[in-house]
Image 1 (spheres, rainbow, N blue to C red):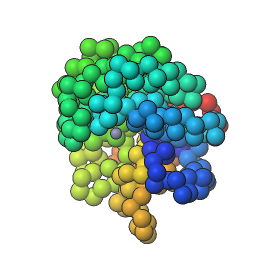
Image 2: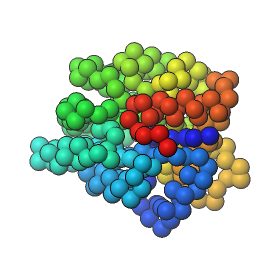
Image 3: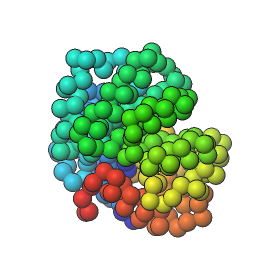
Length: 262
Ligand SMILES: [Zn+2]
């Protein structure tokens, strides 16, 4: 199996002690390419640096997460756009709206989101999207900006959200949320009606450790080597072979982000 983890926070400090080993373990299990999430100007810079250290294997996104939306100002916008231009960067974001945690005021979240959609349009790259408890505002902004190319990452929504994103032309990213024997039940239904060429897989490491790993790792840290657990859970929910989910999601990720074949 050749897998692509389209969203992991590899610049996170929980990987500082053993990042090279984490990457090696994942590659050994067939995770041939990984898109490292930039969620602030600083983590974007680190994601780009990491990508340069392993060209063709690691790629980056350039963005400011809604939690940090207050950090994106008219002054910090130009440096972010410059980063989004870098050749290692395959998407603008992580950007979007998070009304669940509300760590930045909502008007600032909407402003930062719209600015980043404008950056994506100017640099001609897809968007890496985050949304939680903000579907109506999120959809209205996507529509107003005519967004057609991107991924709704860490999708945990229902049929209504799924169908709205598919209608726009977006891809949908599924994490180990689906492995959760309670929280993942609804997602196991919803994932059945995502066309294979729109379905992407991700760990969102170090977060969202799949709960069905046996033996359960001593640390709660998720890592890209656990991506096959996500593939198997998706395949089981859809009644597909894991090999088929792997092949189609890899092809879809390469098409969306313009990644080279390995
Ligand atoms: Zn996210």
